[in-house]
Image (tube, rainbow, N blue to C red; front, side):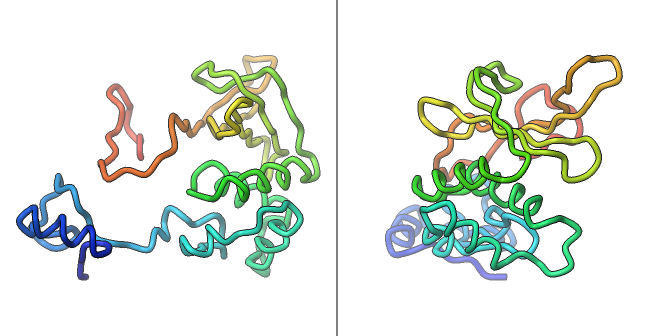
Length: 202
């Protein structure tokens, strides 16, 4: 496996820094500022059968009907999920966890809100207490429903929550949440928050 600076500017900066060994090469500096280029495939996998390149992601339609049609071109034959259930997973990840354009995100919100069974809960919030608007989708399997929490002022996704009935509670409770504090590009490695128990990932 080879590694190289990403683009001319990164190469100049890398050479200025003394040409340190780049990850994933053996002996690389894990705290180095510059890392190997990669296709972002893991981050951009939206659903089974749908792993766009960064260029393809940025070129996605900015209108809800066209976006739905484009995404469904990758719907895998024989999937255990219905087309709508598959679109929930792909659409939620698209708007919440990728560097999609603002126009594509807006189209994604409209596409998701129009899916059968989608409901809107106003004046609600995420597990951190941040107020927003929740779009809730019916369970794909069992009793677990997905919630997308959106900040009404900025339009940014705040969280993706999985809710399910709890035997001791009258209402559904959040049992798993992905919190989005601020979306931005960075070259700083993520750190698991202190106090996180076993199984915490980033």
